Amino acid sequence: MSAQGLSYQLLDSFADNKRLAVYYDFNESNTFDTHTFAQTSNNNWSGTIANQSPAFDTDKYSGVLIHTTTFSSSSEVQSFLDNSVFASDTLDLSHSNLAVRTHDLNFNDLSVFVDFEFGGAVSDGVIFGSLEKTEETINSIDYTGSKGFNVGVTSRGHLFLQCYGKDQDQITVLDSELSKRNLIGISSFGDSITLSTFDYINKKITSKEVSTDSDYLSDPDFFYIGGSKNYYSSSNEVSKTLVNNHINKLAVFSGAVSEDALYYFGSGILGQYSQTAATTSSANRVTGYSETLVYQTGITGYDYQITGQLTIATGREIITGVTLSSSEQPQISRKEGERYYKYYTLNAGSHETFYKEELGHLHPDSGYLYEPTGDNAYATLGLQDISDNLATYLLQQTTGQGEITIDLYGKNPLTGTLTDISGVVQTPLTESYTTVTQEAFSGVNLTGFSEDLKKNYIYYRGERI
Image (cartoon, rainbow, N blue to C red):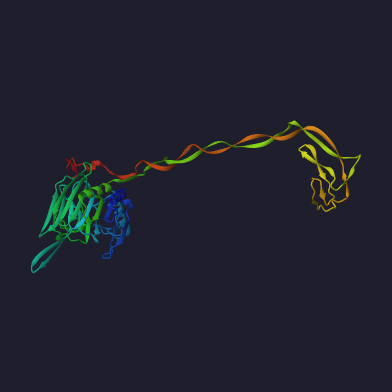
């Protein structure tokens, strides 16, 4: 839809749609928000057409139907709108025109884009009109004032601008050939009005700047699509000012914009907005590496287990034996101080042996308290004259070899991680990323019949010459 195209270009240029005050797309008449109402002055019925998106405030600037027929009911008005005014999906100005209240529009600072086409033979008339003349007599002197201006088509098919200057009408004709369908721009700013035609086939703008007197361009109460209260070639009221032209689209901007900007917005109004989303692909990429030290592995020790035993002879003979109690003379008597042998047994592993020690006998009841004296080793004092029976022993002596038994061990190696470094393992670190394989794009494509826009002929009175 052209509304989407215009909305896109408004956002592209102004970042919002606040500058677009009025927008009508009469080619989309099936989506119009139309209303009928009874006029309070005469109880006749009329109708309105609502301002359309993407205009900033669609509650304002509704178009009121101005017609030459008196309607007595709402249904008659709706039938007239559907079957006459908008029957061709245009605003057919041969049936009716529209009046729009200006509200807060400043006619010294605004721009207008109009898309219109001839409905057969060329007839002169106003396309966008707002000129209002006022006359007042002061001290027998007539004074004429004015508001607004008119833009229309002459009977020879040229655009004209009509405004009022000091004491006279000011009419300027744009010497630019028109087509069957025409796209024009109007920019009013200060003391000048620029009138432009846009050639979208050859990408050309033809403009003419007209000097005006801003004192005579004050804000009118209404502007008219297809008429004016004052028109240089007619003395009729606005309701009679009908032309054989069709309005396709119309946009009014608050604040003047250049003809280049109007050309740009016009391409959005004419064209179709399209948008294509970006296509992407996802993948992973290496952003670095993490390093892990690898240590050598090997034998860290041994586990010894007993696998058997081994008995080993010492290789030398030793004397072995035992002491046995004597059965023939089990006891002998000895006084204190008399000699006797005391025997000791030794265990040497699996072998047993003995040795003897010669001692002087001491009676266990004597208290063992002696005072040695004398000149020889055996002279003692204090020995008691008592006897005691001592056991006797027989010695059984043999010879043999010593033996030892040892455990036999087997070893099993223990493996593990050593302290020596054998290398480094690098593990790649990755991240996911998205690549735009095709950029998103949006824009406006011009649509319509280019034949109607050609300017290689003069379109006059419905004939191509």
